[in-house]
Amino acid sequence: MIIVKVGGSVFSDKTGEPENFDHETVGNLAREIAQFYPGESFIIVHGGGSFGHPQAKEYRIREGLPGDWETAHHRRIGFTLTHQAMLRANANFIQTFVREGLPAFSVSTSSVFVTENGEVVYGDLEVLRRLLELEFIPVLFGDVSIDLAKGIDILSGDQIITYLAKMLEPEKVIFLMDVDGIYDGRPGEGGLIQNLGREEIDSLLERLHCTASGTDVTGGICNKLQEAKKIAEHSEVWFVNGKVPGRLSGAIRGDGFGTRIRS
Ligand code: ATP
Ligand code: IP8
Image 1 (cartoon, protein in one colour):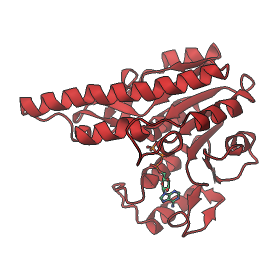
Image 2: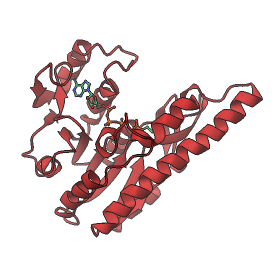
Image 3: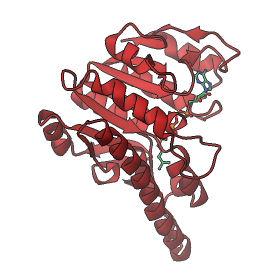
Image 4: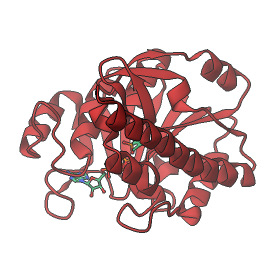
């Protein structure tokens, strides 16, 4: 089984209009997956991109539910609106995959996982396992979550994958981004790292100025690398450019261009 994370930067322009969706890129990705399915089974997880992130930020969902009723009520409305925005992103994915003849099936993340400070502490994988057995392609997404510490929070697609990797032991996890892989510095400045050992990730995080608490100074890459380190305990991990046709296929075959993390 292969888990593919379609980053928000791949299927939408995060700096563009709210809820813009790159149909052409996602269509290309679906066609590449169709070359390997059903011989290979897949789980797709997509990020928030220009769908979930603007609402999550506006309503400060990550701050949880406060004691003050008015503020909490406003945030509850934001929680619902953020989820609805993610359902619209997900509907675009399902439509595009089905058009390519793939039985993609939406699995609503916030109904499956419970978090504690944004980390999954409970996940009901029964339906997901059965969907895989029945040769569906489950499509999950970064979403809002019920959170044991804060009441509500945001669950990133990257955190979902860590949990899935631990529970399902996939053969491979492929992160699709809008750059060619992991750079030793900012993209365009540092060189592209083609082979990265799991044990080298901590020193790379230091060079990228990612603090231990995961403060995001380089556009989400710190969190992604921290999760990749955990995922690599269970599976091979690839980071490839999802905007360039053929790169996903290369990672699936194992001879692709990008960053490969040895477990
Ligand atoms: P999302 O988490 O919303 O789904 P995503 O998976 O596409 O989005 P981002 O959080 O946007 O990923 O992180 C990827 C971005 O990180 C790239 O667009 C890239 O410009 C930026 N980045 C910063 N530093 C690095 C680095 N050292 N190597 C690779 N990418 C980097
Ligand atoms: O883009 C975030 O998921 P990510 C989801 O995978 C929301 O980090 C709702 C902002």
